[in-house]
Length: 448
Image (cartoon, rainbow, N blue to C red):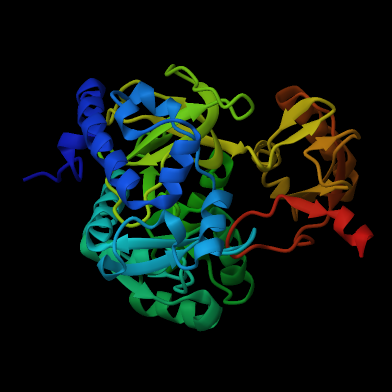
C-alpha cells in the first residue's frame, strides 16, 4: 500500500463551504461556554454590547472585540495564575506553559487533557504536510521551561511516532548537542532559520566538518519566515529538504506548514482554529480574495482552558484561498512582517523582514546578516534609514562599494525607499541561536 497523502484527509481536503458550517456550529458552542466561564471575556463582550446570541455565522465574528497579548497579561497580573482568561476548573488543567516574556511578563497558557490531544492532532497535521513521517527523528534543542517549542513539540511529536531526543541547548551546550547528533544521526534538523546559520558555522569552524555530512535529510524550520534564498542556502549547506513551520503558543503551538509545492503555509487547523485577515490600521475585515494582505487574527474553536477570540498576533500576511495542487483546501499564507515591527520611513511602510529578504537575495556576496539602525524608537522615521549589511567572505575590497550601491538600488526599487547602506565585515554582527534580530537600537545607547 502507498503512503497516505494527508494526516486527516477529511478535514484537510473538505470543501470550504462545508467546513464553514461545521466551524460555525462549533464556535457558537464555544462562545457560549466562554461567556459562562470567563469573567474576562464576559466583561469585554458586555462592554462591546455583544453576546454569544449575536453569533449566527462567521461574518458575525467581526462584531466581537479583539483580544491582545496585553489584555491577557493584564488579567493575569490582576488575578494571578491564568487570570480571568481561564475557563476550565483548576483541577482540569494538565499542563501550564507560556510565552518567552521577551517583551514583558510571560503570558501563561493552560491546557486541559482535551486541549493537549488537540495540539497533538494539529502537530501531526502540520508535520505530515511538511514531509515529516512516523519513524523520523530529531533532537529538540529548545528550552523546556514553559516554552511550547520544548515540551509541547516533543510530546506531540512522540504521539505521531516521531522519535525525540530532548537536549535543550541552554543546558546541554553545543558540544553535547553535536555528540548526540553524531551518535544517533537524527533525520530532521529542528531549528529556526537563523539558528541553522549559527549551527552551520559551528560545524565548519569548530568541528571541522561539513554540515551535510551529519546525516540530516529534512529541515523543520520554525519561529521565523523562511526566504527562498535562505532555503536554498541551508539545503545546500545541510543536504536537506527544508520546510517552514508556524505556530503560536497563545493560539496553538502548531498551526501551519508548507507542502511539497512550497506555495505558502497551509493553515492546518480546520475545526480547531479559524483565521481572518484585517486591516492593521482601520481594523476592518479584508475581503477573501487571492493575494490579500493584512494582519492575521485567530479564534480558537475547541480550546477549553484558555481560549482566545479574535486574537491579534500582529503577524502580517499575504493570503491565498484557491485549492492547492497538493489537494488541501485550506488558506495558504506567507508571513511578510509584523504590524508592531513595521516602520514608516518618510511615509512609506517598511517591514524589516522584507529588507532582510533583499539582503539575503545577494548571498553569497552578503552573508544574509543585517541590522536596521534606529536612531529613534519609531515607528515614524523622518530620516534616511541606515542598514548595516555584512558582505560575504569572498568579496574583494574593491567590490564592496559597488555591492552597497546594488543593494541600495534594489531596496529602492522593491520597497520604495532609499536607505543608507553601511557595509561591514563578515561575522561582525552577533548571531542569534533562536530568532532573527532586525534592529540595532542606537537610541538606547544615547539614553544611558
